[in-house]
Length: 259
Image 1 (spheres, rainbow, N blue to C red):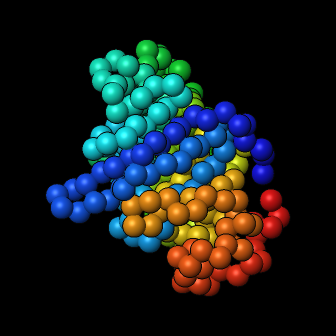
Image 2 (cartoon, one colour):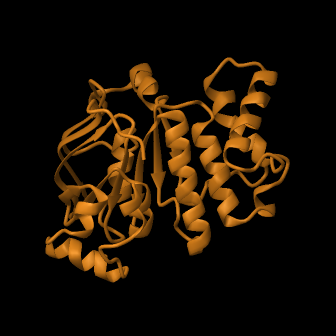
């Protein structure tokens, strides 16, 4: 696995978020380095996806700040916010493909909406990313004609078609069988190595996080309770981390030791 730089590209400083009477984030602090794969893990309902949405201001914190580079995202709007958002690609949990469009048409949407590329340039870029995700001959198919794993790959192709600096993955292996999940893991890791993008992966799948992440952060009761490398993570003595590891039958040996 390639080494990330020490430059911080995303930073949360004391971020709070409450929905109604339910606190979700309670003073969250962490930073993400340029070029790394950063996994945010924890049980369902702990605020992982909420954290992700703050990075592109789909949600705004009640208190605290979210930085992308030197920009305070939660104080940004208009064209400045659009410029920040253009730095991101987003792989949604279900792929979020439009059923009435072909796979290629779905992938082309961000280019049609956000660039001045010609039709020929768009077609070439779509063909390039389809090849990158292992779907070179599937562009004319409808989402209903492809498997769940292929929908995730098509969603990933759409996320990277604009050549973003950062890709956000919301539960990329959710709903997939173990073999397909590991295929998605390898694809995420290969794309990061080939493009040097920063990858932020929200997941409850510890096998995935351990396989692809440079660092793993654990969200519990509204706070980050640990940030560590995969090897340090499986050796943690934090009670909540140990319980989470045991729930997925994780031992201190695994593919993360090969990194």
